[in-house]
Image (cartoon, rainbow, N blue to C red; front, top):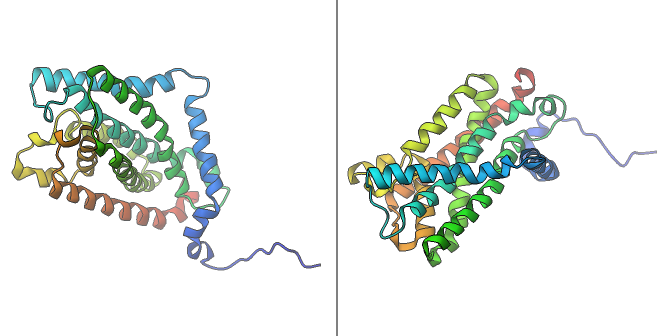
Length: 276
């Protein structure tokens, strides 16, 4: 009797059907994402509380240092705390996503070495998991708006667009770093430093408008500059303008890292099971 299920062994089949396999293994993507969410929040209070306290306390510190002591200007008449928190939300998502993605392959070594599936599912699922923290942080933004009696503009409808840019930025850089971290384990010590440095060189605690005009395009080589400016424009409305050349520069850098990250990951993932 002929079996209904046929196993086809063909050289290069996995490569040819790689992107189709991403759809075929979508249930694994859901399972890994849900597992990471439950591990993060199951039987813990600090997990949810940390998603609130970390961006909130950073916002308070930046408001005091940059707003009160350095007396840097806010965007329009926007309360400085809201301006900072509007930037803190995408930055918190990005930094957590990068940190989680960078160690995702190593943390799933047992799964990687035993079962075939498109490995890129692992870092992407770890990035998507941070969406829960993003939603929790966004609730705090709404509370701040109510407290300061600040009314957002209709630009808010574009917020999902800028969030997707943040996701793609994290995906590109995250997959690239993940690939390197498998082969060079020293990256696990470098990533926290780079993330912390990025917090201060990105326009989180201050408006990017304070950067001198002749340096703004160069400053926008940091892809998070465009994301943060986009979030502020969407949340604060006309009070925070987007520097279009800089935004396009940040968008181009994001696309560069997305292509580089996926290319590097695809090139190196065949060796993951051997070196992990």
